Length: 356
Image (cartoon, rainbow, N blue to C red):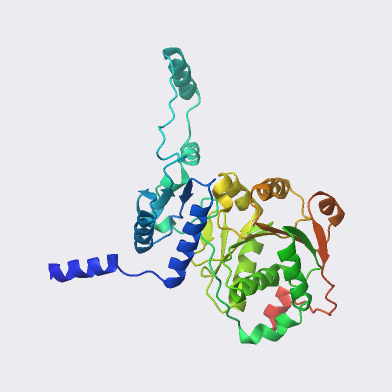
């Protein structure tokens, strides 16, 4: 019995990974090798044991080094080149004399560090989380790789989607995205820019066999979740597969996710982690950019700085009503969508409950 169990464990350990995942990982490794400025590449912690094993074996054949860190759901892999990597460099040292130690001890005794502060100061990949909290997000987007999207549609919604103005202008929009690094998409509420424009990009990449990985930000958590669920429904998928969302304290993504809806704050915290935060990302869409707050303003500053270093990154600013000239003077041109002119009926919760 024990020998059979051992054989089952051995076969599961060497089980092949999905072809789409292996292709995406190889594309990311080739991109890492071709960039002389990149010395390290960290893969997300949600990779399976078989996928981590595949990475270890592949990088060894390419002459690279790999190292796994963390435990359980927090285990992740970092691959690196020998020259310029922080992994192979000596750890930094901070030498404190006796007076400094006494001052620090007195400070901590007077103002003790709370449990929340200790948790915030610990490194995110090293944080220990119970299996019950494994699905919860720490407020940052997970690293991933660009993949060639799959194209599936809900046949019941095809006619509805074709009636939206963004669908009629899809070719002009795609041409503008290909010819410009940054554009503004100005369209009235209901034109389909939030739900359809990311899907148009995915369909274009699928038809041209181009890997894609898209972040689409929303000003509020409820809108990020609801829009992600709507797009997943239109593509006949369960949320968390190729379409997902990530907000503070909650995440529904997987290694297959190519379109992630998130809040402005989550993307901003991700960018604060360093220059590698947008590695593998092809498009960033900032929706409702006219709702000016501290998160959106700082996010645009950080993205504008990232665009100077990442020439292949595409940035789309979307809004229904705003002074577009402010943005066009500073970073980009404007693309206006026509207004959707149709009558809408409204139903209120109290009356609906009374009828049914």
